Amino acid sequence: MNKLQAEKNEVILGVDTHLDVHVGAVINSSGNLLGTRAVSVSTHGYLDLLEWAESLGKLRQAGIEGTGTYGAELCRFLTSRGIVVIEVNRPDRSNRRRQGKSDPLDAENAARAVHSGTATATPKKQNGACEAIRIISVARRSAVKAKTQAMNQIRGILVSGPQDIREQVWKTKPHDCAKACIEMSSSGSSDLLESMTETLKLLGQRWLMLTDELALLDKRLDKLTKEHCKQLRTRMGVGPYTAGILVTVAGDNPDRLRNEAALAALCGVNPLPASSGKTIRHRLNRGGNREANNALWTIALVRARSDPRTRLYVERRTAEGLTTKEIYRCLKRYIVRELYPLILSDLKRINVEGLT
Image (cartoon, rainbow, N blue to C red; front, side, top):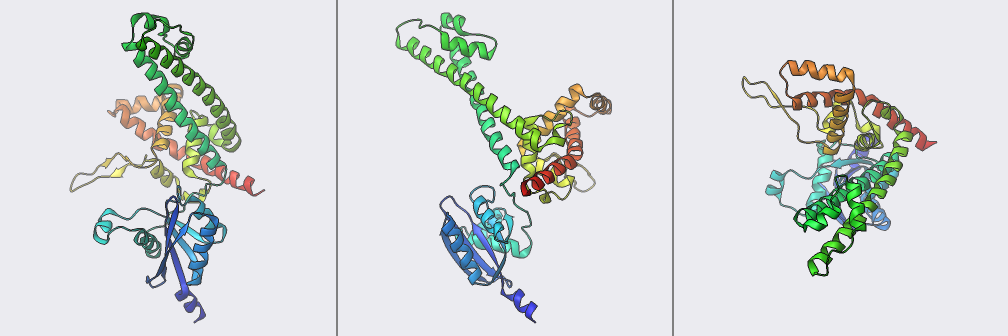
C-alpha cells in the first residue's frame, strides 16, 4: 500500500527552455497537470524550479527541451541532484496545429512525452573531455570557413581588378598571395585604387592571422585526441579532426549508445527502408549528424586511396556495378562498425580518468 501511495505521489517535470527564461510544468502519475512556473536562467531560478516541483510530489524524472543548448546547465543541475533527465524533441507539427503553441503548453508536452514513454533519449553530459574537444572543433570550423572566405574575396577582387595590380599580387599559392597583398604598394591615388589596396592588405592580414589561429587550434586538438582518443587515433585514416568529431557526437556518457547501429543512426549512415508493395528497397539517410557523416566520408576517402584492403573492396564492388557514391556509403557503414568499440572504450576510459 505504501509503495502504491508513493507511486501515486510521483510527479514528472517538463521544461521548455529559452535564453533568459525557463518554463516548467508538472504532471502527476495519472497525467493530470498540477501547475506551471516560469523561472529565470540562473542558479537561483533552477533551485526555485526544483523546490516548486518537489513541493508537488516525489520528483524522479524531468523532460527537457534543448538539453544541448539553452537547457544544458539546467540538465547538469538536475542530474547532480539525482533527477533522471530525458531529452525531449520539439512537439510534432500536427500536434501543434491541433493544440496551439505556448511555452507552458510546450513544457506540459515535454512532461507528457516522458510519462508516455515517447521520449527516452539520454542527453549528453557536456562536462568532460568530449565537450573540450567539441569547443575546439567549433572554433576550428569557423576559422577554416573564415579563412576560405578571405582568400575567395581576395581572388574575386583581383579577377575584376586592374591588370597591373593583378600581376603584382596574384599568386598560385594562397600563402604567397596573402603575403603579396600585405606587401603591395599603392598603384595610384584614385578612390578605387586606394580602396582596393587597403582592402587587399586587410584581407591578406586576416588570412595570415587565421592561419596562425588554425595552427594553434590544430595543435590543441591533436594533443586532446592523442590523450583521450588513443585507440581511435591508431586506425587508418582517423586524424585529430575526424576523431574529435566522432567522440563529440558520441558524447561524454557512452551509455547513450546501446550498439553500433545506434552510432550509425546518429551519424546518418544507416540505410532507411523505403519499400512499397512488391518493391523492396532502402534509401539514403539524409538525417543524423552531418559533420560526423562527413568525417566518416573523409576516413573512407583516405582508405580508398591508401589502404590495400579497401582498394580491393572498391574494385570488387565497382565490378559488381555499384557507383562510387554507393560504395562509399557501404564503406562508411563498415567504418562505424569497426570504430564503435574503440570509441566506446575511449569514452569509458575518459570517464574513469575523470573520476580519479
